[in-house]
Image (cartoon, rainbow, N blue to C red):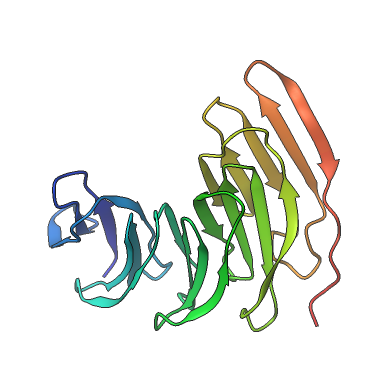
Length: 213
């Protein structure tokens, strides 16, 4: 069954699972403000992050696991549901069972996080700019592969063949790749930073990374 998950702003901040028809399937109170929700490609898993915890639900409203976080802001899941990333004061990478695979303490708070479909690349929106992390073949260790100083707080980031970042002032940073982020050919295309008020301000190529072995 396909379903959507809605984070509703109320006193108990419930998480609601709905069928495509729009009828409510289940509701779950998490006790503090819901900051972000993600849904696996098959619709079977939904990680939900609040200011203090990350929860992972199945389609029957069962909480599969929970883990405490500090100032939770963003959450993402790989298309195969094997990797889940949570962002806040730390960047945490979990496996499907809730075990922490990798932890990173950034210089500034992470506002949002996105995962490529294969779970090999993590994109983060921070108060300092964009940070992109590449994971090894086993997806157990990540290193910073690219950064971009937006000179402004980045509000959100999303990945769909590239990465799109939105900033409060209306500017955005866009990266596109014909190979797709996380592909073995690496990040080889351009980054374009532009403003509503002007023409593109930055246009440069990303460093090429060697193919995965």
